[in-house]
Image (tube, rainbow, N blue to C red):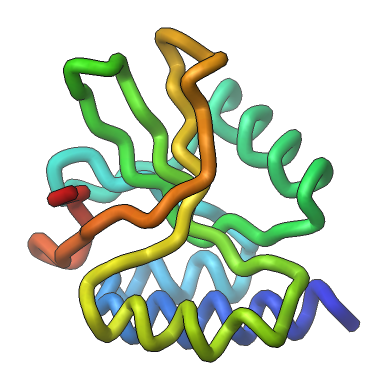
Length: 132
């Protein structure tokens, strides 16, 4: 039941973020997670899927989008996810309305710098970009 509830919440968030509708449908029907690179949407490759699955299993979370970007701190994959803690969801929704999401930031170049945190995002052509 938990997973089904998380999927419903993820779909709600994806719609709020105005993610490209066919991408939302693929997530809903097939469970396919996309990644946004400079606003363009791509399907996860095998290595990405492995990282996402490891994260989901470790934290009992559901990833619904990955924002990939290059920064001075390395190549980052920002996992947008629904946690198992339903009591946090209303705060997550308010943050989304404010252009902020709490995410897991996976540093691909320096893994020990990976961490949880709030990031600023915006929609760009149906995909997402990190702006802060």
